[in-house]
Image (tube, rainbow, N blue to C red; front, side):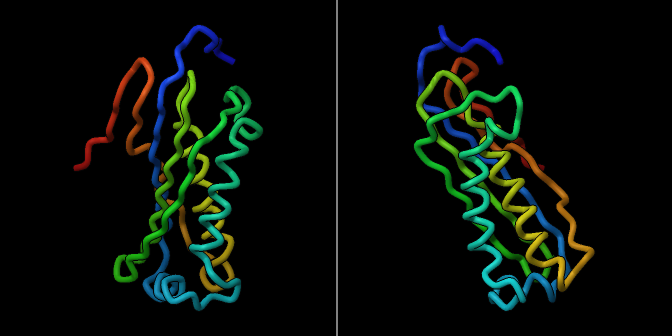
Length: 146
C-alpha cells in the first residue's frame, strides 16, 4: 500500500455510477417491484453499501477506511431499458473514497443482474465510472458529460 501517514486528514467524497441495460419490460418489472426475487433496487442498495464497507478486503492495495457515509440510489428508465445505480461515499481521512464508491456501484449493478437474470439472461452491465471526487491534495474532479 502507499504510505499515507504524512498526509493530513481532509473531508473526502466520491460519486460513481453503474448502468445495467435490460429490456423495457424487465425495467418496468424492476420499477414496479414485480420480479421473482423481490425488491431489486432495495436489495441492490444494501448490497452496494455492504460492498463499500468491505472494499479493502476485495481490492488488495486499498486502505481500510472509516466511512462516514455510503449511499446507493437506483433509477429506472423503462423506455430506455436502463437501471442506473449511483453510489456516494464519504470519509474524513488521509486517502480518498473513489474505490469505495466504485465498488458500491459495481456490486449494486451485479445485484441487479443477479435479481433479473431469471427473467432476462441478456441483462448487461454496460458502464461503471467515477463521476466526481473531492478532497485531498488533488482537489476536486468531475467527469465531463457529453
